Amino acid sequence: MRIKGAMTILTKEAKSLGMSIEETIDFIDRYPMSAPIKVLQAYEVYMRDQGYSWSGINGERWVK
Image 1 (cartoon, rainbow, N blue to C red):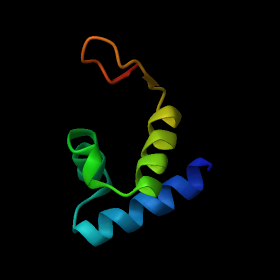
Image 2 (image 1 turned 120 degrees about the vertical axis):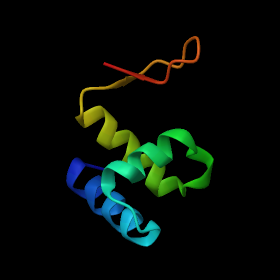
Image 3 (image 1 turned 180 degrees about the vertical axis):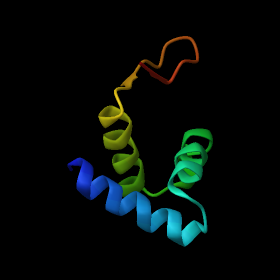
């Protein structure tokens, strides 16, 4: 998946939740198990495009 496809999925998810894209990203970051797999994959592509990388050490998640 590329960033264009990821943004399409995130936009549709934001619209279905009645939130902006930024609010949706924060919501997925706080409650990742509430999102479908495709949305989580789109979220990962979006975060990598923003310059973040996955850490997962000592409670850290996405770091720049």
